[in-house]
Length: 516
Image 1 (tube, helix red, strand yellow):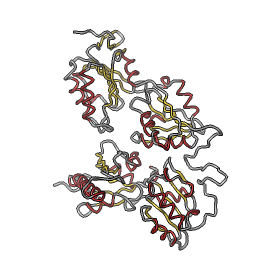
Image 2 (cartoon, rainbow, N blue to C red):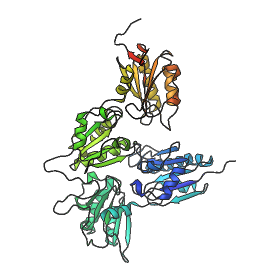
Image 3 (spheres, rainbow, N blue to C red):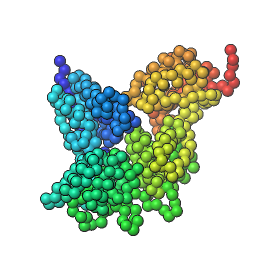
Image 4 (cartoon, helix red, strand yellow):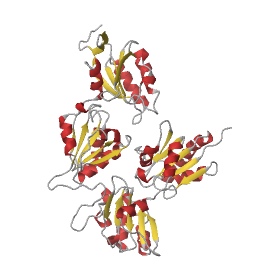
């Protein structure tokens, strides 16, 4: 019988990946399974923090809450739905532990401080070995952002949830030296009222997303109720600040000097421009895009793409993991709202499986209605690969992403079948990754139901980059082992021909359609 695996409750700290402890980073890298929670939108802050320490090949358990604050038709109501979710989530983790796999369950902040981890711990720690790795709490991060002592001497700090009734919150604020109020978001109007009723509003401060690139620090009185996210905190320090608070806007209107503050130019509103660098080669970046990149105060994007942009003194670079598109878009819009000229950087064309859609979707939120957003085109990876062999996209064609991260495989398969039946060439983006290895074979088998085995297939890898390779094979001979995330595939139509020449294979899809 196999030995049961170990459950790790991994505290990740408040948001900055550099505040993850050495032990937490080691356990994340070594674990067989990485588990994390998110709301139904699917974006997990915990996973994004841990991403730099994860390794290829790890199993992932994405535990999606059925409800957060919304209503539910569950017979047990909100609490019944949540309890049922925790039971089912615990059994999913138990299956891994029983099979001998170690599980690192990620927790923002500290695992035992207002964290979802404790619900799994209660259900699993009596059956499996469990160890908790403490993390820096949001209270500590917010206090550091504020830059003034929170308590000193014999003063008492009271931590309060903003979900408490306003009257009770008022009473407790009156009776303590210092306070940290958690769980804000939609509770902020009641929190502000309690601070006012307790006579503490003038001494209270608001910190949003402490330690991250989107950190904001304000006086509690000046915060707009509609702009408060859940991941924010209100602090009432015990000792009166005796030094200037470095990240609070002064009464004269000086700009807060936090890490994302932007020195807005007079009569110069901010904007977001989503740009495409083209695929790989620097020569494929358009002059229009180069001009915007040079003028930007801030660059936002996936680390690999940001690294392709030359450094410019004074320009801020906000690089992040490739799986946090919505968070990246919100950060860009927030920077622009405060006066920054932001370039959101994509590879290829930003409107083709890239950041333009994410930015525009996020910008539909009313809070960004005054932020200008532009999109500048770039050379697509499909056109770049096609050019290396001729004109395989010379007639009607479709672009399909093989990734099932944002849409189910059933939808991918349905679209492949429809395009194949319509006899169009197909450019396949995101064909495989370290964790997605079977889709290429499934795609090949599906297309062979509609295409001849000898149909030309172009495999273009790192086109325009230092490791460029381009090959032409038949559809029947397409080997999934030859395809990775840096490869783009072009599948020919019935009118696509491959011709061997003295200078290599040339592929084209005729613009003349020969009817049978």
